[in-house]
Image (cartoon, rainbow, N blue to C red; front, side, top):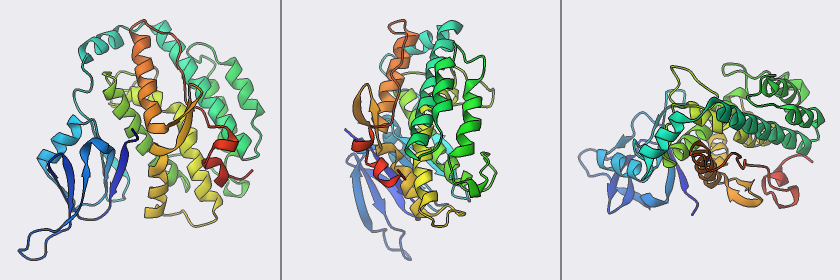
Length: 316
């Protein structure tokens, strides 16, 4: 089942009734708010709250978390500022966490090697579809060793960002640099929330990463596992940039396009799957590796050109 993403950019009152998320418009004077719509909570995967006057009931918050729905709140600039996830996401969570804590360094280095290779291959696939030079990235991917001691991830990034966008942009990747970094930041924040949701759903602790580690980072494992998915966000941003429409300011249309990342088709284990579903397959595979039942990860890939709806909108 494909879970839905809901974005709220108006001052709605959100509550729960009979396992439904009820959307009500603000009341005028002393009148009761009018019901606008209701949606089954079990159908939801991500809820984005992007207005300072949104009111959400405690009962709805609890029900959303019990259904493993990730809740993202946005700041005054309309950028994701917070992420709310359930404390318990799996029936054998205690076992999963013990195995995660006990995972050996060699295992984590091998997993990071696979993640880096998957990310670089997806970067190469996107450059190829855009008609940009991609062969150096395939060479880098072949040379990645356990733990990526030679930092091929960074080497690949230098080549990738130098060729991804039109030359006239003189693009430089940085959170606070010029557009389209604003689009990338928003897309990555949504992607991070989706992966963090899957991490919790697999009974793992987001704070304990495979490679990323920082005392201020509560989602280190999500940051690790989202790496192979980043090029899918980049592909959507390329669509926006190549449309020749303004993107200096993040608009509702831009957000709508980027929120579609959850339902974008990817190839996972040779089959098409919504990106959101594949994050659950990946985190379950990571949990198996921590438990000693596996050593290799299947990672998301771009769907073949002729079958990929996204490809139809990308330059050939």
